[in-house]
Length: 349
Ligand code: KG4
Ligand code: ZN
Image 1: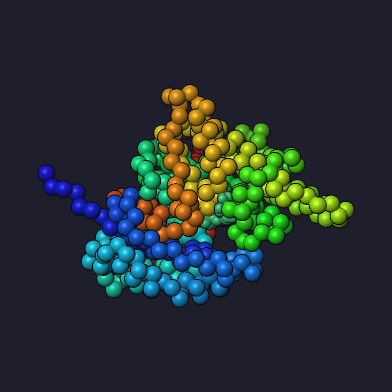
Image 2: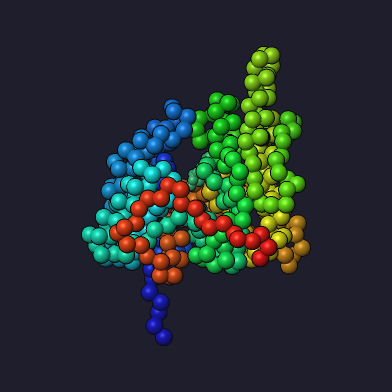
């Protein structure tokens, strides 16, 4: 019997403020991962400045391509496919990765694969453990808050979405009010563990029988509370504020996700995206799933914390599944800043 050949993918990610390259073997094994972060350049503006992001991407992308190959002890001839995030994200930022990947593919003749950034975040789980299908993912990042049903490794459907702010965006906005540098999620998470849920902020859409979210009411309630305290020169405890905000976010995410798990009965539950690094959310989801009857408990895969944020390894993992499915791109591949996974047609299948 002939042994199955290893598949090595060189992946690019440049959709926002990290430029990243990686070599991933068989969609499961990281042979190298380089992440060049630009966060410091954006911090003084309180968020990502698209033009600045593009300039940084272009400065480092050739260098980190070489680094990823060197660190994996590879040359181009060892690479079976070149993968790149082509959306969603900042168009100028995406274009740098897409152009680099296309140029490399054209120069070497290695096939090209375009990857959806959200599919990538979800597939960070595949780098940790084997996903059994159907699977259900809670995808929570700076730009997205979605519940996604995975029918197989390449067919994903959104069953719930945010109506306004994404969870990470809400963290970053309330972080600004508390004087926390962008991105604020990690600091608010650590403050939350030092405080108590005393402010009783609103939990939106808990009673609705869909899987959608809304965080703008919570954000406004938080900001109003802080402004009101300022006006009357009252000093609020920042740890309790963080704990109260985080409790409201987690209650809503956990409630809706558990409802979806009960409805769809997935074999695996996955969390993905920057907010999936949140310790409170990770603990809560694991605890909620442990409360289900044994036979209804999906396998839980929480990606390594360092793979929750943007990185090219997750793009290499997702690309491996597309490779196996024969989904290659050609040189007409373009950045698509508003690329979206398909929405489920029906809530009941
Ligand atoms: O996935 P990501 O790196 O970029 C996007 O695709 O958006 O997510 C970044 C987001 C930021 O909003 C950041 O504040 C949030 O993830 N984040 C967290 C934590 N770590 C990062 N939010 C809550 N708790 C954390 N520990
Ligand atoms: Zn992301």
